[in-house]
Structures are given as structure tokens and as C-alpha cells.
Image 1 (cartoon, rainbow, N blue to C red):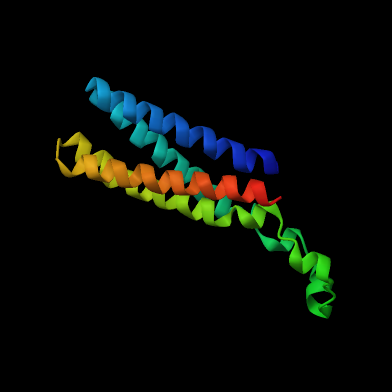
Image 2: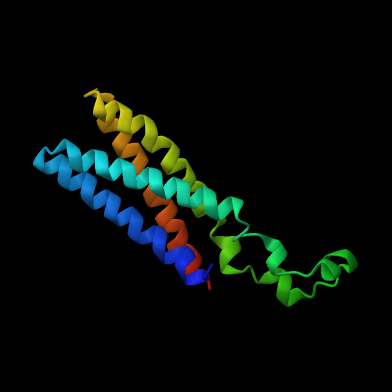
Length: 139
């Protein structure tokens, strides 16, 4: 998977979901809020696929011979690849997807706790977004 795709796709998804949820909240349209929660669930599934698919694994950056012989010079140990910097963001996106499931259920059943859960889910998604931004600035 392309490294540009690894950091741009989740950013677009976060903003799409937040836009749809806020629009649904302001206009009082439940279907938009539920769609936004569904988008967050899809983001969590995407994060799970990336994490389980070894797209952020360190094995792609060091050969087994380098690791076995400990032939790491200072340049390699001081320089963290962008994929490694994105790992906390993908954990956040996975957690966002997990939080979106009860949010979707609570909103579907018209519980008042749904609004609080929507805010928490959105904040966790934004945390992942800002981790991506910080990773890009560090490169």
C-alpha cells in the first residue's frame, strides 16, 4: 500500500464523517448522523486491515541480517519512517471504529447518551488526525 494513501485516506474519511454527523446534528436529520457513525465504523475496519496487513511493520525497513548482527548505524536509529509514526494514529482510528458501534446503536434507539458518545468518538478520530499531521511535520 502506498504511504501517501496511508495518511491521506483516513484524513478524508475523518472529515467526511464529521461533516455528515455535524450536518445531521444541525439539521436534525437522524439518517446523516447514522451515516457518519457508519463511516467511522468503516474507518475502524480500514485501520484493522492496515494493522493486520503489516503495512506499518518495521520488518519492511530493516533486513533480518541487520537486526541479527545489530548493524544499525546512528542514521537509521534516529530516523523513524513515516509508517512507524502513523501507528498511534491507526490505533486511534481502530478505537474510533469501536466507539462508533455503541454510538450508532444509541442513536438508533434515540438515547440521550448518543450525543455524548458522538462527541467522544469525534474527538478520538480527531486525535488520530492530528497524530497524522504531527507525523507529516516530523518528516
